[in-house]
Image 1: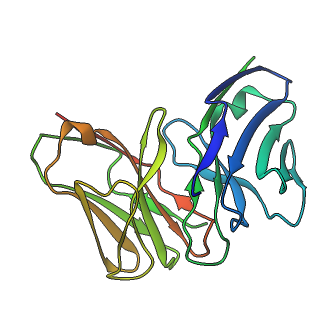
Image 2 (image 1 turned 60 degrees about the vertical axis):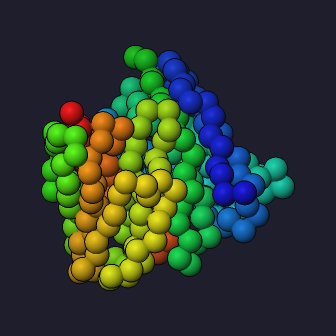
Length: 113
Length: 111
């Protein structure tokens, strides 16, 4: 029940295309769903996050779509750029308490020029 | 900006050595975490701490211990390094659950 399943493990997209990464969770107590972006040689950094009271959150070219009934959420990267090439981790937790984040296993995104 | 500093970017240690990985955060965060990152396995939680002198085991604590004597510092200790502990080690801190700030990582090689 504590797992967050992330797919695909790797993704190759052409410049200008849409990158889509999917995550699914089991624990219905989760109420906070962040995405982290990690560039080579760096630690992960918070990219965007969503609470389940909304179905979508957009920040620039990055959008989280959330489907509470299906217990799924996804990251869409519009107009993907070579600079978006990184590893992306989805995660889930109970926000505001002492619950730790449960991470997906990551998706390595490569955007070809 | 919150800064999480890991003392070494690269370390090479011999099998059987006792290894200390240090992590310091500068924003008075209560929560601190140690992860290891391996290809295909993602981020695996080793230990975490919600307060000074407090520690809890994560998913893979075997072969590791931690110390948190001061709020800003969280140390990971490999009691007797083994080759299967060769990995990237990441420290993180948070004030509120979910908003983690990670350090840049320490790439440890045990030979």
